[in-house]
Image (tube, rainbow, N blue to C red):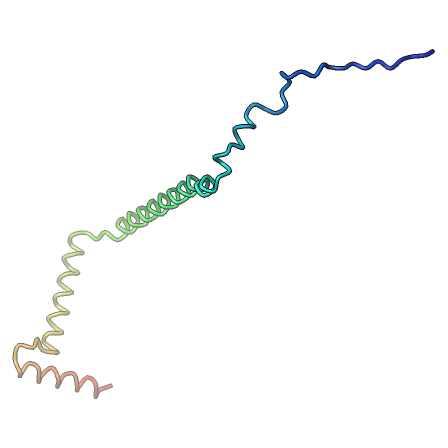
Amino acid sequence: MNRQPTTTTRPLTTSARVHPPYLPYLHSAASRSTKGKKLKWLPPLAAVVTAGYAVTSYRDAQAQSQLAASSSPSAEQAEAAERRRQQREAAMADAYGDRDSLEALERAVAVYEAQRGGR
């Protein structure tokens, strides 16, 4: 039994595709230039910077709103705090003088020396 090997051959034609249709567009001459390589990272970089800025500004806004919500005193508390501050300032002016006259300054120096010597 003499069998001859059967080979199936396909004719070589010019219509056969050697590469996928999108491959020539990937390696265009414009993408090989140095200008194209430098600008290649610009859009992703801009996106990352924009996202970082958005996250930071959102976080700052949330922190400010939480701070304002937790420390918003009522009107009565604010008035009481203002009265206490004015009383402290008046006491300091009485103790250390308000620099209107020489006598007030001399009394302030005397009070200061008495406090310093008492320690």
